[in-house]
Image (cartoon, rainbow, N blue to C red; front, side, top):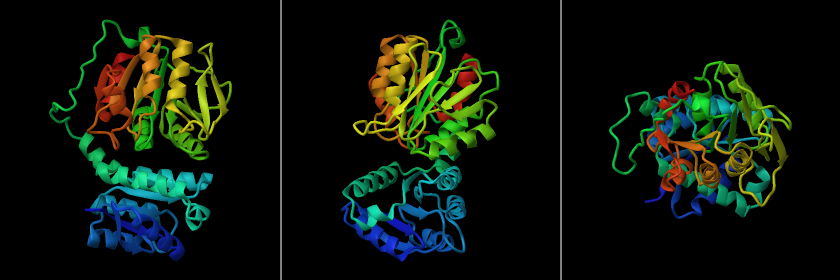
Length: 353
């Protein structure tokens, strides 16, 4: 059975083209179309689709408000279509916070031009989200309750050290993708102002989004959070977020970051592998790498380099991950020393440091 999709958009052109494109895939089937947020709420109740594509700017009721209502009444995976402007990024982050799972660029040129690249990205996101069967709202309800019994499929590894990580770790490096904005925010906003080591965050996001993401976290967190710029110092109490469309690396001295142009030969800009690899070269055994929810395996090779230098890797567990791809890769490669549910990570960091 193909996954059922509800399209929500106030543009009849975008509705038609998106429906045509989605229906080309044998595993996807558009079961309905809505032109505004209220119609989306009504049709989500009526049709019970497996997933929803949602525009963020519509008449009568906007996409963010619709996401909140749907998550309260009929929670299911939602992909937002957004402009890549700074304002579009801010609104999309509101939608992710409300429970949307992921987002895509609303590019009329790609849609009207029948771009194969657009189709492949769309299919990957829709199918990954549908197969996960999760949304941040559902995952939050899971992690708010006591952790379930550990399954034999993914045994949790209890990590204990003879001495606190505070005595050995000089940098916390966090990598994430799909579901990451919510997961990263939950961790960073729970850390105290006197957290003793610098933090870098590599979140798969385009240009403009990482700036809006950094500013949002800076308003909510006790730590200083900023989008990284070339030469920014790695200091306790500071979180540097890799800028979208570029690569962030730890300088050879281990005391600051470098920002370089994103190479088209690298799939992810920013890349967790590149940032982790540079941290391994600069700081050796003094890094704690944390791999969170996300599709794909970015971060696995970087984690391997860190592990080879004597650094420590933690990862998020399957149950609390929106997409168990990146953390699964490091766990299956036997690189992680500690597998944790999302709601335990901040407390574990605080206790170790």
